[in-house]
Length: 347
Image (tube, rainbow, N blue to C red; front, side, top):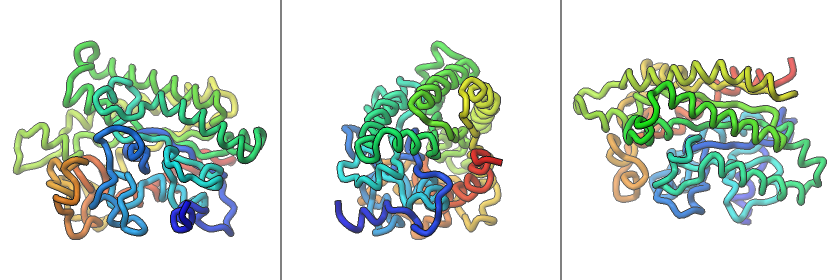
């Protein structure tokens, strides 16, 4: 692989002794650094102006103007500067040794979520992880590979697409579930997933909750009640909060069944909501539309080289109609490193 790309994914600072030897990531577009570049789907972020603030100013497949929250977490912890996608055919041995992302934009815990988009379901990401483990064993041997997996920081971030695609906007699952029933269905899927990756050796697992879904620009647009007076949808935010409350209760129950595991909840809802309610405190100006494309409904196909991006993404909470800007991801990463990661470490 080229030197510049290889250097990008090297350890953030060779002099540090990272608390975790690797970072392993599962989920959706919030943590997909470009796996969708390598599959047949329209859900891709590999065109300009995506990536305009990424090193080299190149679109990588990340759905933002720059790095993702997991890139910032990895670099803060001294693991590497950016986390590569597992499907990248040019991964070096060091890339694999220090961890990859299996996440796929548009994915969810519910397999129905990916039916039309053809992206990689969270359950299929487990199969990719099995393949990764075999590759890792080929590089460092069985024992060291098992040690890396057991000591790695594992991040799981999904669930938003399930609610948007199956319940809020396209009410497929509403035919069989009320919101409480669908939340429970998703949490059962999450529990099965966590047990699968535990069986494959994962022990230090961070599970992200849902963001304030009703504040995503796309959701305000779809509702179209007051196009000129854009406000967060409290009913959808309330559903996100109640899901998160159930998740907080569930994780200790799962941990109790899995010896030597640590399952920690990452609250995305309240830090992001704080940036939306108090934008000035974070240097933001615009909270209800995205910087890229049409802003109101700019997402993937609507956010490309034909449509323009705003002049200063760092003043926006959202990059497109769904995804935060690099500036917001940097703030979320600071919160995760300060408040979440320490709960995985020995007292």
